[in-house]
Length: 46
Image 1 (cartoon, rainbow, N blue to C red):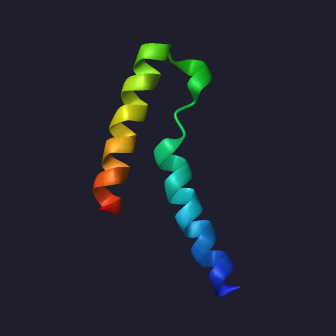
Image 2: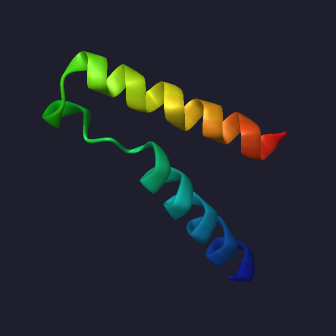
């Protein structure tokens, strides 16, 4: 149960970070946001 809670906590944070509701924004804004999110993720992973 503890591992499930840890997984759910991490998954929620990652999902919230990367979920950008693609259908509500134009392509250029989406690409910009994805690039920023990826750069931040790579910085945190390093």
